[in-house]
Image (tube, rainbow, N blue to C red; front, side, top):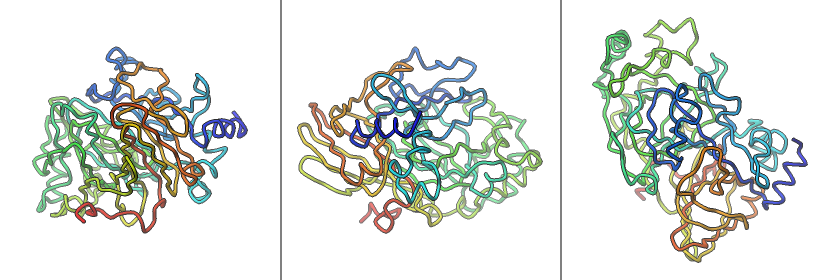
Length: 405
């Protein structure tokens, strides 16, 4: 694959790349069956790999799964009727035009990704390491965010609640004792946390080193391009959690040091008495035109840094929107039919594993600046999610809580 091939594909798509679905299994979770993958294909990687409960969007980040296939987690560009090259390779060759000179110069990669996360029940209380911690094992930290699309959440499955943080007054010794009880069954860590009911059409911003146990709503998750985590809960829904999922992204010499694991948490952030006020998000209008509206769905800074953000575009039947953004984005549809820069947009009802759909695109930096034309050619609203990388909006990025205004 050459830079000329990437430029040819961008020229043919008027600055956008069509992307193939990227499916990721998790061996320790049960698929929620709502992200439109055909039920016969839920275990397409083999039962030993676990069911497919995630679809990754515009990803240049490999999935950190044991026994993974070589390109697991990586997005492929579709040229003609076949997968032609990975987005990772394309950014390496044409980073300035794809993601902008500033971002490519700083990161030399597309440093973020997003996913659908879809499970039947909750997952264990866990955290994602910060940059300093992840660097000790040759990786990067992972802040993330949540948005719960209404189109995928007609049913909430088994536990549409998420435990987040720790109750004020919890001590580090309390959590050390939980980790000490790892092999005794349920280690009781959820006794020290609070569950929030998840509402479709809302979201959350989660910094690194903050405990959270995501519930069973389908979640759209813009996040940093890393797959590090540590699970602090020893049993979920009656299933044991291997201790290796706690220790895997900590230095090997610390794997038996439970005090070290607890000290790795951002304690003040976890016991914040105003946790919801500090992290909860609701959509609000960013722009509007004739027959369309663009809404912020993920916004706010993580520890003072703009790392990622997201918007939801809704175009009415027969309407056309021309959207300009100051940065590249990964786009996918949740509802409806139309076109984007003349290429087809079609939200599938069901997808076979390996099928090349027309519901996902990467909008290059150059195309975003020039303006992308989205037309609704169907009879229902056309709804598109798009997420952005770091330092795209600057002072224009709303703060957490901006929806109240």
